[in-house]
Length: 135
Image (cartoon, rainbow, N blue to C red; front, top):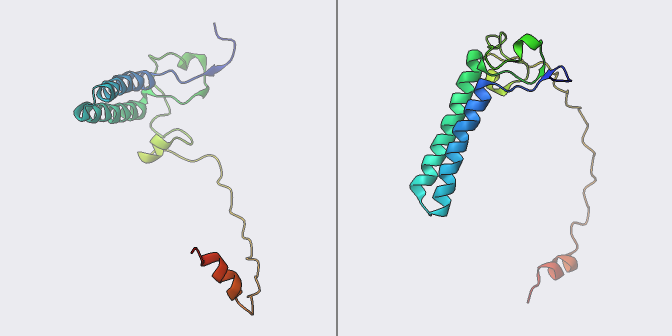
């Protein structure tokens, strides 16, 4: 029984992605130990596949962001009802054109540049010569 009202986002998308990425990382580890470039490439391809599968499952409603949610939606068997419109501040949803940014972006302050007076004499030739003389 949980003491807190938070669902930490344990979802079909998350667990599937982790399982596929674990296989890909294991193949890459074997490639490192055996000095096998094809195994390294294959492991990298499997990891990219894990990313794409996780993203597709997330967009299909099988991935939920962590946060406060009704207890009826905590089960992994329950799809996310808000997946169609996108999750707030979710990069995956925004890449698919679904997301919306809820946190306001801070306005960059307009600061006037500090005026710097030019050096009328220029650099001191004696100092310049001593800095560049290495012989």
